[in-house]
Length: 449
Image (cartoon, rainbow, N blue to C red):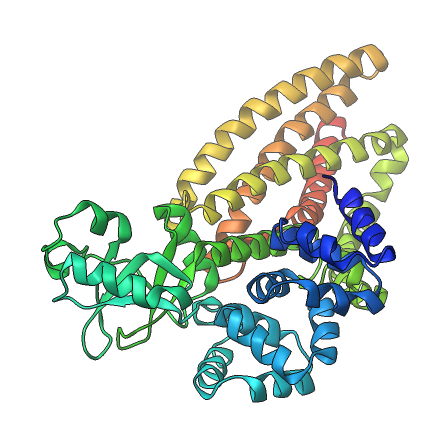
């Protein structure tokens, strides 16, 4: 059923006060779908609808809701409802929620949590934003090295109900040092009397609590993990990152890169919920930088004013040259940024990238120059010299643009900057100035103006 029809059906049952049927109807839906429905209903019915849900489904739905809706509910919850939500939610989801809440709401939630949960939540909140520790959960399945397969499966059945993930189990020593990993699949397929220490995978892949969350997300992509262990500086196992959190990180990082590609400061707020002044603030800095850098192009044009005055037809080809250069540079930078993100390219590959981009540029530049020369001969039959000058300038502009587009993202990586900073708007601005210098100098040399 479509989202609009779901909301319409909910409102119809609410109008009829048919809460029994509404509950039967809602519990068949996925928590994500219920969260979307609750986001659309009027505030006065939000709490009523939420209270219809069973405790476990309510907690799952709550964790999928936007921060605004969560805050509305928390402000109207009884103390017992706050306890129930915190108890049923995963600790990582609770931490994610509290990071977006005002201080008074955070204090109330923490005051209703159990002492053990409160301690864990406070520890998780201390990790740097965007670190592996900030997105991990401490609800993981630990096993002992001397357990048999039968003992391990019994332990999982007994203690697995409150764990975030029980498919991947972690073998630790008495002082919680990570020693190995084993999956439930491996346990089920092995002999009952096999010892965990003999069959576990000892060559573990993990991240440290202070590693960037993007590092963890890339490990999921590389090794197809469903969960990834997180250890502290002493190799103590302190938590895991699950695949759903890794997907959230990937989405967040991709969104941030798109914002940088558009020359705007990254924002964590959804588009429609971001204020006009905040959005303008995120954009204005880059617009000022790009505007000031464009003054360089104006200065170049002014320095060649006499040549342009002597042969005004040259002015009409400036947009074509600068746009083609910008497009060529953007093509190269986009592919190089992608290669850097996927670890297909490293800083050491700078010369390989430049050599490849040079050869691509020669082919593309030659093809464009020949086509442009033929077009200009037809359009301007009496301007052979101008046609040659523009086509030669176009050839060298493409080479220059692809060199800059390929090199700047690598240079940014070398300087420990995000290569997405060297995105289309900035590269286009730099290439525009270079295109004008090439064009006007070629024209001045070949046309003797």
